[in-house]
Image 1 (cartoon, rainbow, N blue to C red):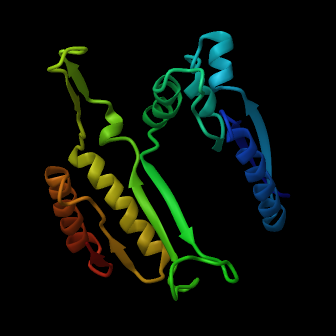
Image 2: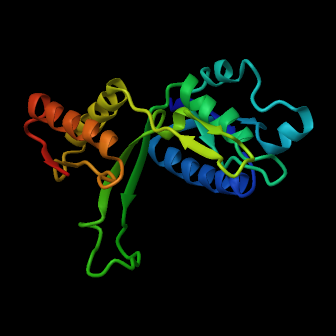
Image 3: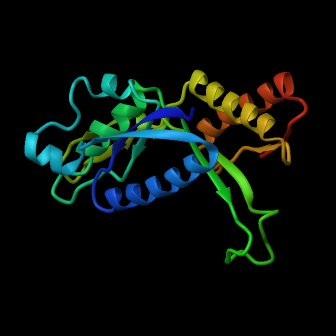
Length: 220
C-alpha cells in the first residue's frame, strides 16, 4: 500500500498559483514512480484573501498547518497590498512559529541541458546551498529616527545568536556527510561588509568542523 502524505497547498499571489500547479504535476509524476500518495488540501491565504477578509493569517493558521506533513507554498505579495503586510504576516510568521530555520536550495545541472557557464557540465554543477532562514535581517530589528525630516535615519539590524549559527552549521555538516559526494562544505559570506556577523559564522564553522566533522573538508 502506498504511503500517503498530507500536503497543504497555499497558491499565494501573482504567478504563485501557476507555479504551484506545475509543481504538483512534478510531484504527482515523482510519487507515481516511487509508490507514494499525496493528499492535497487547498488553502486560500494570500493577497485576495486579505483584501476580502482583512485577515492575513488566521490565529489558528500555524496550528492548522502543523497537521500536515508538508506545505507547498507559492509566491506571496500583492500589488494592491502594502509591502510587508503579507510577507511578515504569512512568510515570516510561518518561519518563526514553525521554526523553519533552514532554506535548502539544491543546484543541479542535468545532462543535455544548456548552461551559460563555460566548459561546465553535470559533474561540476551539482551542489546544495544551505542558508539560515529565521535570524539575520529576518528578525526585523531596527527603527526610523526623525521620520520625514531632512535628518531622517533608517536602521536595519542583522541579528544572529550563536544558537542560530550553530544549528544551521550543524544541519549543513550533517547534510554534507549524508550526501557523500565531494565531502566538502564551503562557508560563503560578504566578508568585506558583514565583519561582525561573518566573524561569528567563521569561528563557529571551524570550531564545529574541527571538533565534530574532521572528515569533511572546509572551504571559506
